[in-house]
Length: 216
Image (cartoon, rainbow, N blue to C red; front, side):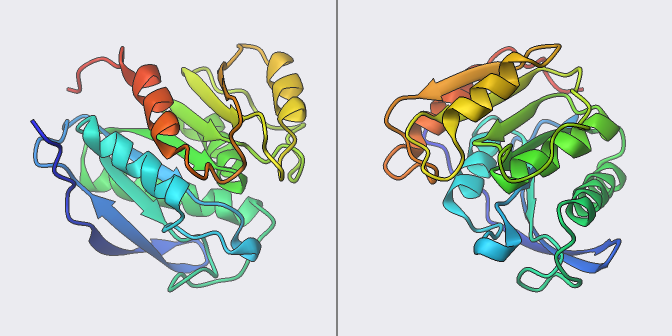
């Protein structure tokens, strides 16, 4: 059967620095026991919840029957507040997760993020214990990750080896030192924004999620 994407539902929710703008996408056959929160790239460099990599992550979760919440960090779009060095943005992500838990009692989050948003998702994962974590081209050369707690959930890193913004070797060297080790998928010839390679990103996430237990 051909997948029919759900219609995005605009959402306004309370964040620690004011109202956060978000989009909820809920498949008709949504698994009741989980939802995904997707974090966008750097707010000071044009990152928004409408970034095509963020959209691809949300759509992939939807194809798996998982509700998705993508949102604008403080100071982006209609979200109130101002840039806060990744620290405040982590609090934004935690507020979105809490909103999801209130809306769907008993449901547990999955987290994903791209570039700057990958580090935010990682930081949030250390505090909320998600079912799964997906970080795409995580910005380990742009944000301090020395004090970041390694999550104990299954974790996928997707990295293009031709990334012109986040050095692929730095990401791979960092990942190799982590315990427990994340799953790492390197995509040959792929640049930072996955131009022409979004289907490969989708397939990597689909493969990682294939053994996800049925939701409650």
